[in-house]
Image (tube, rainbow, N blue to C red; front, side, top):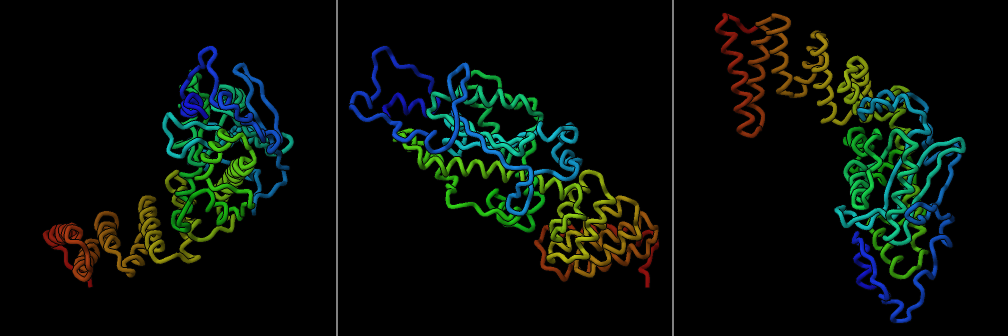
Length: 415
């Protein structure tokens, strides 16, 4: 490519002066389109007022299973809507929800990065469709954006994976640079990466989409897969040589990302809505319980915490879960249940448990002798633990203050 074409790759809006010839014409090189994209990926041109953009469409039947998971949500989406702060998700038809993923000229973002391939998944009477918009050359970006904008007008919500940090800001920038109004403003947006981190942070070392495919969905990609970090170079090579054959793997990568996104959304909606019916590992049960608690469904959260504890948890998670459930019971005013849980935590060596028991006995159960006993026991345990100095001093100050106050009231340690 000559300097003119290279500048266009980075978003420059240039026009050749009359009579100027590109380098390949000057050097009599062959036409770059030696293996055009339509010979590799079946598709057609979509004509817009800004010119054509290439698109392809693939349909997955309604009964298609992606790994171990279907694509059709079988339960309601109340919890998904509550977590995603979407006011209208529960009211939408399946056909009003779009799933979006992009392949870009770089992974760092910025104004010089653009999306050369945009995949859009959606449901219709035929099943789950994935339409992919591709620009053969950066000069065709306005046509791609216009065609995508027209399609997005049919939807009310959009689902992405890391889209809030990458895909949508990047597309918004490209729309603005091309003097278009971005089409995402009026769409409810749910980014599944953030939910994946909440659900599987204790069970999976990585919550990248590829790892979720293997460990959650049971999906293994085919040999056509192209690693994400190679995709920008594949596109630049295509622009340079006109050979679209390596791009088949890029299209495959994008379409599987979209289908995995829909399957993951289905799976997440199901386990959030009906965790007791989803045969979840205990770590997942406790993770869902935390989401229930944060959304004010305290009794449901308590039941899930109990279920997770009964099924068995790793030591650190077991301890934290007891503390969360005990705190929840205290918030509910169920002090008898909170005391039983804090006593269990105290037996595991929790300094917090001794402090919480002292508070409950003093302020809620009005049993000052027990409050003094737990404070004194907590002070003894504190001296046995190897803690950073500032942590030790903070706990020591708290216990001594409570002990002094109770003794000034004439309270004596219970037998």
